[in-house]
Amino acid sequence: MSEKEDIFQIAVVGHTNAGKTSLMRTLSRDAGFGEVSPSPATTREVTSIALLADGIPRADFRDTPGLEDSIGLLELVDRLRTDRRDDGPSLIERFLGSLEAADRYSQEAKALRQARIADLVLYVIDARDRVLPRHLDELELLTRCGRPVLPVMNFVSDDTNRNEEWRDALARLGLHATASFDTVIFDADDERRLFESMRVLADDHAEAIDALIEDRKRRRRRSIDRAANAIAELLVDSAAYVVVVAPSDEAKDDDEIRYQQLEAEDSLQAALRKHERFAHRTILADFEFTDEDPEAALLECTEGRLGIDLFSKEALKYSGVGATAGAAGGAATGAVIDLALGGMSLGAAAGIGAIVGGLLGSTAGQGRRLYRRLRGGDELRAGDGTLQVLLARSLDLARALCSRGHADTRSIAIHEVVLKDDFLKTVLETLRSARSHPSWSRVDRVGPDSQGRTALIKRLARTIRSRIVD
Image (cartoon, rainbow, N blue to C red):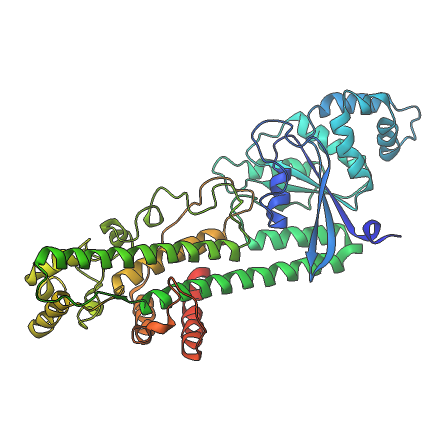
């Protein structure tokens, strides 16, 4: 027996648009598999994909065309009976050898042919649909194929679901082993329970199924760990990043000084925006979403803090930072200006000395020092308010991807979470050491890593990881 014949084979069958291809996409973590469309009969041929664990193919899932006319087909199959002892599989085989299987019922024949040779049949149900006679006839046809059938209810998270109605109908048919697996709103526990249900009905392949369960656990842990690390890198890079404002000579007038300062501000903002986009693409890849995914290349979000400019007043508001709060700690050190602070520009700060002592919360001496630095030229850094916005936006994305199925073609749905004060305090205090190490930053540059940078990122990632999965 060949390896292909020996592998655990699963036929994915169901009514048109029930979500068969969506199931395949989410289980395989491949948003490019097949074609997902609200139009009927999108899948016209049998396509397959192997699920691997430890690099070894463990299961072969076969996507089949939708069953469109089960009522008519069941009547046809019943007419093929020539002896009262004809069983279900013999009737199905008789149909598959008929002219109707190559003509009127060609799509159904492709699905039933896979059901006949599979080790297990997954019958995909759109839980939003009413239970209709056509569904019952589909199940009757599948049970006649002589293979174990596991109903899988899809779209169970939708408010219009009929979960209980379906469970009751399936129980009446004697199908007590069922699974719920939403291919759009992903739930790792539901995926595990799906595999466990498959193991009950296909015990001969328990080893392969157990390997897939463990593989999924490892991949999820790896995704979360890598995302936490990407966010930590973004924060360390941003905290350490410095833009130098060249010192001005006495011959320069205020307008020229202001122009120079604004150029430096724009440079810092542009660099951090670019670095944030890079970090977010990394997080997408960490959860096995690629730039080829529909809507995924970042961030077609139109609402909330991910849909607005990093340095806007709204970004601060969405991240829980008041227009005059949150960034004072960094700015009061004398060398740090939080460019997101209420939209205040360096030029405006240079022209209004009162802002330094009042709005930034500095002492009078610190205010004079900061004012002199602004006039004489110094360094610009992202302050605590900016770091807080970067943290909040990246956590929003990572948490959203934790529950995003690979069949979801909509824009990424962000559910913003207010970050607790003790968590923010821990993160900002952890980042303070990066302030004095500009060489640690990888914004707009590459360079050899250092033990200090690596250790700080690891420590920060452990703190951030708890907020991704809580």
